[in-house]
Length: 440
Ligand code: ADP
Ligand code: MG
Image (cartoon, rainbow, N blue to C red):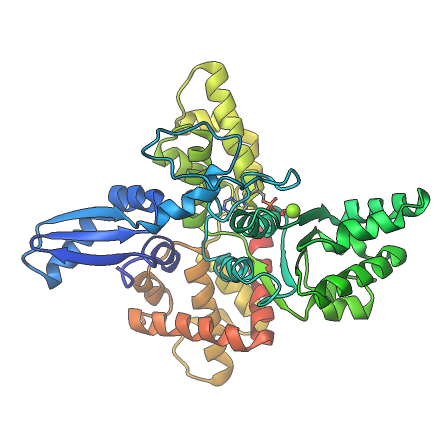
């Protein structure tokens, strides 16, 4: 399946699955019910054929949701807004667990769809939640607007609270921190202010880039930070850029912010966007046909908040007009929204951005010459095409002068492993990706 599918599709739907064969029945064990229904609807036939190539005796295929999914669901049940489910479906809620009011009840790990864009950030955030204050401190999450920074940061808070409801989780936007600070000075309530922040077991400050140029707040935050850090309290920060790129931020803060772990959230690809829409429609308890979700995901690629907004608009439109969602309803309800968002990435854009970035000709990039200065850009182009488009390995092979699919896979894996150790390569790729995504 890995060879025949676009990379992200494989990563999104197949990576966490396993296979068991009992007699003539093959079972695919999947992580959750969304994956189950997606695989059933889209890939059942191909999976069965692939298995039958190896195991002729298999004649039927079933999909089973992994048990662990039920324990993960418990966090979801903490949400006060959700309607109660039937007893059989509802795992017991820990008696003392209370959601602190500043956390958004639906920003849990359970509701966070992990895709190509967020796998590392998610894994690291989970680890931070498992070992608060010990493993990744501070946890610094950066990325563009609407890509899930707040959601992920709060998910850590929820998870820690779910395990121990006595923990004090303080979540503030950077602006709230700054305003609180100013109010505390004005009202001579500094000791109360300090206590509130320095007593936290977990401090989450969202959009920390707004500390920029605010000297007094930076000074105060520096002390808050040090107190918490010295006491091994977990600190989570989010921003739209890496610490070193935040302007007018004291160097001592910059270095502290980068001293734990810095992870990024990138724009999600098509499969991840579809998965997110499925999750959101499930949360809303509204059923949208698969083709409608796919249509939305194809046409709105800029950020997850807009994707969600479109889904809400569509749901309201349908309810109000008593119609059921279809592609033509999407177009009439969201026409302008969709056309202003319509930015599909095609491989030729990627190729021209890579050529421009490295000042090389298109024929050289797509050709067969093995010169060093061509090989890396070629591998990067292949990597980005795998990431941003739905092309399969053989299709990409064709674009690059009839290369074998294994060569394409090799190039992709090469870059995947190189970016982990080579930060300048990583930033080159990020820059090219931005260039690609900013072409209309
Ligand atoms: P940011 O803080 O980066 O601007 P948010 O965390 O506020 O973005 O996310 C915007 C919206 O998109 C929220 O409603 C959030 O629940 C949703 N969202 C973002 N990422 C995901 C994801 N991976 N899975 C599910 N929902 C997501
Ligand atoms: Mg945010």
